[in-house]
Length: 421
Ligand code: GLU
Image (cartoon, rainbow, N blue to C red; front, side, top):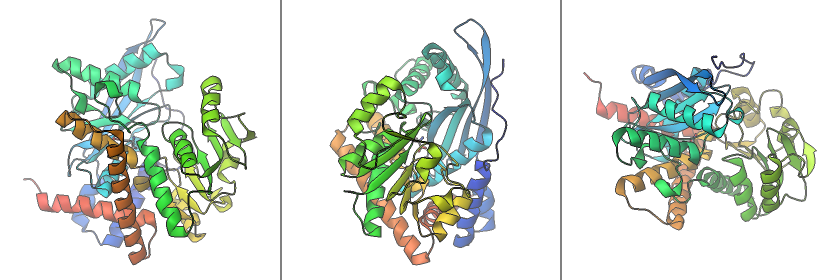
């Protein structure tokens, strides 16, 4: 049986969105047409169809992707996503965004993304392990510590990274921790990596709030998503003194204007598997329209659209997910004066600590959590300040400014390297 993607929905094609964003920034930069054609094209795209033995004994064929958008500034870098809706265009867009993300943060990487078309919740741990090890083997021809370094994304985490690390290490006969990041600590993972994306979101949210004249302490925060990114945002926002009034996951949302207690919520989710039912029920759609100071969409793409953007009542949106706003929603929110911190800046904390993890693996010398967190804070703050300064000077959105900064850096690396042959 072949695992196929569900029928296309009306949601915008993410690759077209990424290209349109690129074109807007390139226009504003007056970027040479010759450089545009290079940066618009993903460098390498690998599609693999591979068999996996299921628990019942039958064999299913899964489709996986690994796209390397750019390796101009260093090895390709980016996560691996397990979801039924994964397709080549989505992986391309996410790979391109990784190129801009690493350039914006000044990390010596290009951009990549991988994905497998599957519903991880419907697979047993054994099936997931066999799928992961076989997918890792299929993409082994293009990944490696100096070539392309995967990491977690939606539907994957430290467990999958450990399987990938082990599989590739078995192939060469020695431990190769630097081939993947987001690993468990026991095999060369980094302190602070698990929460890094969330921590970065909170650091830039604090900086953006300060810019708007308010403080995280006492701010009302709404978080969509309670996974790799959202759960850490709820925790760290609460620690910063913010009042998290609503949170949701695929099962629905919980709302309490007096604020949700993170520890109690975490224990509730451990037992029930969802945040829904922890407090007053709200749907995911209602949650996005709650009055609040900061809205953090940390679930998936295309959540705020032309339909609901006019009803969003946040002052500040910080994109924990990749591509949570459609371009139409982005324009509407800009016109309405809502400040949006774009994904390539807001959620770059994950890849930043992935970089620290890779550096530690290569040096075989490990840092304490305080050092990881303070270096993360420094890089995120610097990227935010630089982006805000350009946005202010050019009178453009933070999204356009972030893209302009990132694209000009990648373009420069292409120019100084020159065209071979
Ligand atoms: N998947 C994460 C992202 O979208 C992390 C990537 C990485 O650490 O390489 O940024």
